[in-house]
Length: 143
Image (cartoon, rainbow, N blue to C red):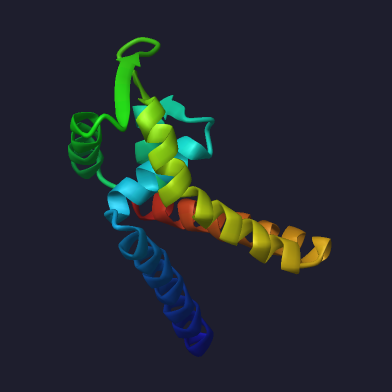
């Protein structure tokens, strides 16, 4: 079992390294790539709190990256429901994201296209199962 877990961890690390390599190739930081990835996946705007949840990056890192993106006229903030802020791509940001992040979506779509429907479903099923069990066992650890 330990050998399989080590293999999973190795593969997961390699995949993360490839995403980092993609960010480096297009000249952006990992945090900017993750923010734009989440935003592009949500039509160019989303709640700032959703970026925290979906990227897994700390609030402080996200906030710093968003401030820099605002300074570069890539995003702007508008008031959302309650105390929530909505992060929106500017026109410049839409162009920037289409050049820097959309190729990543295209690569991921190519990968899924190379898999059968059964392989796609199985991958999603097992990934969701892993996430659910990880969440459950982490909850069990909480005092």
